[in-house]
Amino acid sequence: MASNNKQLKNAQATTANEEQPQQNNSLVGSIFRYALVAALGFYLLKPYFFDKPKLEMGRQNFAVHGETMGTTWNAIICATPSQLVEINSNSSNDEETVDSCEILLSRLIQKELDKIDSLASTYKPDSDVSKFNRSESTDWFDVAPEVAEIVTIAQKVAKETNGAFDVTVAPLVNLYRFGPNKSPLTELPSEEKITAILQEVGYDKLEARMEPKPGLKKTNANLTVDLSGVAKGFAADKVGKALEDLGLNSYMIEVGGEIRLKGQKIDPETLKNKPWTLAIQTPEVASPDRLASQHAPQMYRFLRFDSEEESGALATSGDYHNYLQVGEIRFSHIIDPRSGKPTEFFDPNAKTDKRLGSVSIVSTSCDKTISCAEADAYATAFFVLGAEEGLALAEKLHIPVLFLFREDDSANLAGLTEVASSAFTQVGSKTLDEIQNEEEEEPQKE
Image 1 (tube, one colour):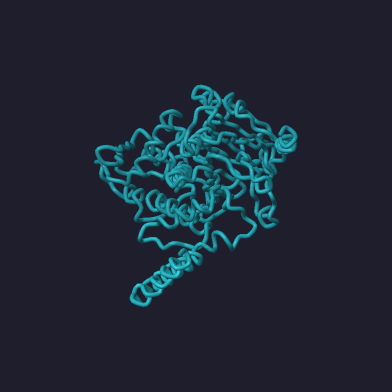
Image 2 (cartoon, one colour):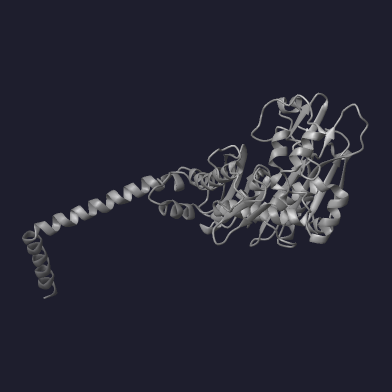
């Protein structure tokens, strides 16, 4: 009986198949379509999963870089390929999906940086800043929210430092040929010229607002602004925020030397979380001879950011990369808005004591957390103030700051001296040897 039942079912199935050939064709078509979709998906995802056999499917470090604001940017993002595949698939309609994790991340970061540059650059005639600078109106001038936000941060630091940081320094920046004006400077500006320009400089002549509409306002029709002392740090903050909005909470982004970071990276050998370690460079003047020989700069101190949740920042201002020379007199690009002159004049024929080479501001979760934009502005301000006046203000504001002085342009470690605020001391910077010893001891503790 059981055998008969089985034969009946087989016969019924055969009859049904014979009577419904269209259903069979539909099934074959569906299978074909599913196979086509699977093959297409395999092709699109192949670069993520199969073209990098050395990478595991867990969290990985993706390194990308590019150019912006007349300088370079570098980033390391720690993520899983699946996170990036999802981000790639969720791209807006006007953005094509890509076949590389690095290309995707590079595109995301470059988009944010290009936006800030297009708004805040003094080199781009169509930027909001350039339009504001050309305007002679003393009424509120509409700008993008990002520009108003940058200026608001700058004004805060300007007030706290009593004008040592001042974005209205633009005409002085141009006077010394560190701005868009690149005509040769054959002699140093006269006192009369500097005094005249100072009449059109002053943070108290500038206002910024976010409501009811983002805008800037000048009380002097000839007032102009230069946001280069804060824009790179602000851009790093914006990139960090954009990455976090996408769920990428472990990253390090550096824009022209200003750094923002969060979370931790992955040790490629142990595949375990590892703190970000950043270095403070010795303030060695980049002479043409050293540049030609690809001379590697020395590192003075290293900072480890152990927190997995909070963001951190590091910004440095110095006279060792961006400077000009008139005759035998070399001068820094950092202008004192109060005197109208560069902070550092160096005459090789004159006997000089140790000179301030760099100022570094650090922000971590264990101290007064400040944004990278604020760290960027404070670093410039404290370089203008110098160690004596700057240290007193840093203690008052609880800001971690390190002043590095050098005996000569080589900035060898033996010839460096430092002045640090108590907040910086608490951060716990270390030498390279100390960092390496700690890393060697970690496996033993486990």
